[in-house]
Image (cartoon, rainbow, N blue to C red; front, top):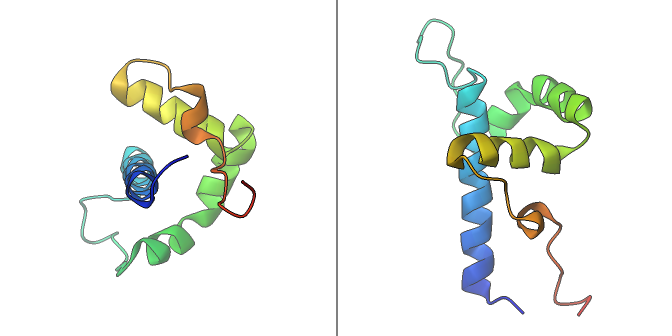
Length: 92
């Protein structure tokens, strides 16, 4: 069973990977003329949801997108359980 601290670390890591995917696709462009203001990750997600949804559809799921990004960044395959749904305390 994971502790609350481990769970928050896992969520933080997944969020950093999501931001890395945004950057890899040019969502976080450095060109200020084309940069839309995003005051939160939610704003950024809403602005690019269609493109991200298309990639998820193309690759067969969000787990595959995250696993591919992990493998590209760290040069090793992602552990199988890293992108599996977390088990809630209610289900245990």
